[in-house]
Image (cartoon, rainbow, N blue to C red; front, side, top):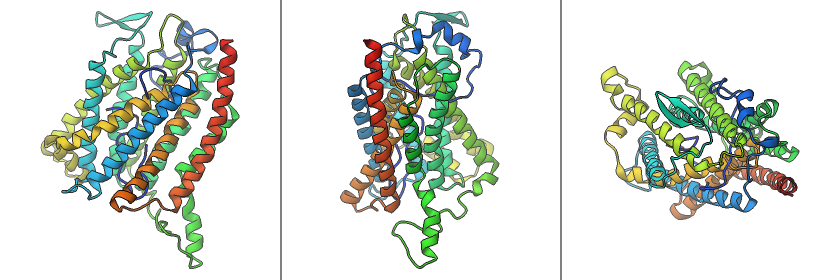
Length: 425
């Protein structure tokens, strides 16, 4: 399908949370992809002078992408609740919605990139695969797409396995922020990234992680108050009871590990691509997105075939797997259409990650913080329009942390703008 994370799972408070055809850059995490293909020596062959990547994106373009991502994510948060929260009847199960929504968004992305002609990578260098000349970049963009295909079902499975949704969301959101910072550290050491990670960006990481983990961090305080007979609305002292039992589940730990590793490799690759554009190689985030989506879609299609027939042919009986299988074999095309906003999220998410002239830390923070804000807004709209549960105390505390992180990011952007202006001058 698309973005790093799969459709947001329905929540009782806020909904979780991508850019435009020109001007993205990205983040990638340490990890793996082919060490030989992404070695510093290879990067040096194609890297731009002084670690630059061509014309950096403007603050105006960055804000445009944030607005697009924010709007698409708000719509995504709304359709999740419309289909699974009882607003639309009959109510669709979470797994059935996730399957239909994911397939619909994937189809929308593939149709769009083909119709727009984004598949052609402008490369000054080619390699031969099975007797066919292909752009040099394909050898790491395609693995990035395969990682995306791991992330998509991984997201769904994390919500389906015996793991607290609260903890799952903290891990998924927090891992992107941490990985983005690690990517910068690794690529600076490798000589791939020449830009400095500003102190303001590091402070933004701290407050963003606090925002992501607010629900978990508040539980000890809630326990303390509950022992004194004080209760806070929307917060339960039993919220994390058994929440970490998943560490004893081999399947849960395997899925979680695969999700984090896949995201790490993908973010590393995205930033490698962004930070190694030579003067003869035009930075083309549209082509990156298109090739990555095709690779992801082919991989997911194979997984869909397995999930569709696995329960019958292999006797799988786990409830969530059966629900996904039924949803694949009996698609709800209205729910497929609900994937259109999430398909837009995928576009904006990748272009934010690939925003040129910014560090992986900055791009990852912008991506995650925008999604968090969108989740809060969609929850407010649902509470006002449909009488669903409004944001609780934890959500507003998280919102406060987000605002502080955004202030640090804005200061970092002002410094980066001065830096880029000096380079151009």
